[in-house]
Image 1 (cartoon, chains in turn cyan, red):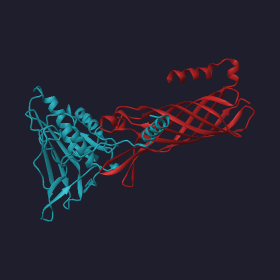
Image 2: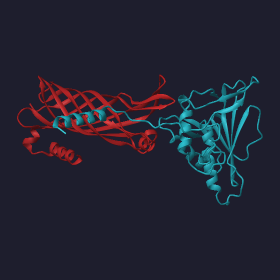
Image 3: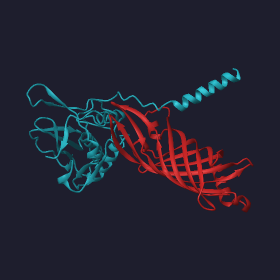
Image 4: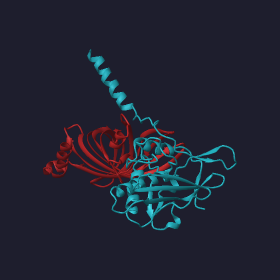
Length: 222
Length: 200
């Protein structure tokens, strides 16, 4: 290699290094997150996609003062916030339930009501969870608050109960982020009966993607 | 590199009396703007960019040779936010501080204008460890240059106006962990004005 060609090669390498851009990962491994609700007009189904708009962040989460729910949901908020790169989601625990966007209660979910869609989760013997999402009659509004129920099916000293409650908190909060369906993959936190306690890469990608797809419903307090 | 900065800073502050008399110090206030920190595609194209941020700069220089060249050390600190641009909308993300330290050389250009060029480092300090800074800030190598214009206002003091351009490659540990490859070239431009203790 002559000196001239060496200089040209080095200059070319320096130029490509200086001009190249960061390459983002492909985000094509995600699952269906959209809710399917029977159309109010009687024909077919409506596909509902939702994410919290920037002007509604941080999402206000009220948590019943029943240990270990407050600590579990504080942790769950951090886990979902950290799943995003660009500030798409944030939440804070609030003391006033009347203005909260998400309500978390301990106990068995009450009987389903009209216009409420229930996402049952976590069929572990120690605990279970459910998230209720309400839509307006025309399916253009998400009626707040989103209601989360966490129930300990077993005595406080039952082995694995603590882990079950913590996992279920992260899973149910994932529904309130906008993942309105369950993952078909058992390795995902948003699987209907999850065994992992943190969002998988697929969960994270799904959450990222849904946050950039235009929402079909607007969150409103009735 | 840090040792060189340290030694030079020691020289500026604790030099022998003769050398100290030839040491020039300055402080400036201004603003800095930067190009995109990164480009990503999540359904839509999106970019992340720092807002134009207020900046403070301090520095000093020592003579090198007899042709008007000086070696200089300059530090800057800027505090601002960064935002996401997506589908024609802009969303504030978080607060971000950047600090730079550059060791360089300066010389006469034309009349009261002097050129400068240098190498150093830039440190990103996010207010919170979140988003692309989930694993904390990052330090990157920095190269830059600029021009200074000095206008005497007092016996020992000059009004100093400076324009700077610098360049570095940006990436964070979080981005690497999330599958981003290569780095993003980030250019920054700053304008500032301040006072310089003259060595006339």
